Image: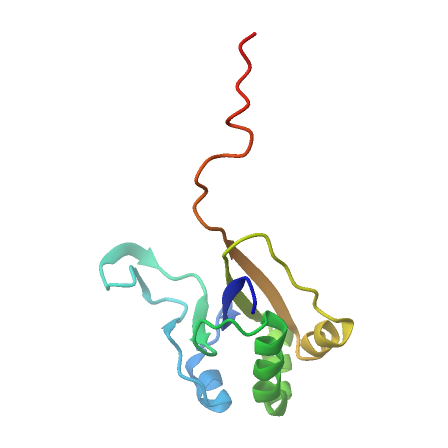
Length: 149
């Protein structure tokens, strides 16, 4: 069993384009979405002031899981492959397509991403964003070695 849990999300960003039609084409429901010019708000809806300077959406691609990150990305790529033209068009017009991985470690761990997996992502113009979350440390490393000089 893996010594971590992970969740993969799809982030779409674009300087001007409304991303809702892209989500509908992909057949995916955004968890968070805004478009350029929308008022800035907190996730709970409180106004922050100002306007959004670009469009953004985040789509959860599955629950947090102990499956390998590579396996979760492979499953996401299979879902997105039929829509490669849409993803490439978004990228070619200034947008970004990103797999965002929330990676929650129980202890020291890691994973290797094969060149085939990275190439499949590159063919769809998908970047990779890793957010690493470590367990709370009981005691910082080396704290027991306090010098008395």
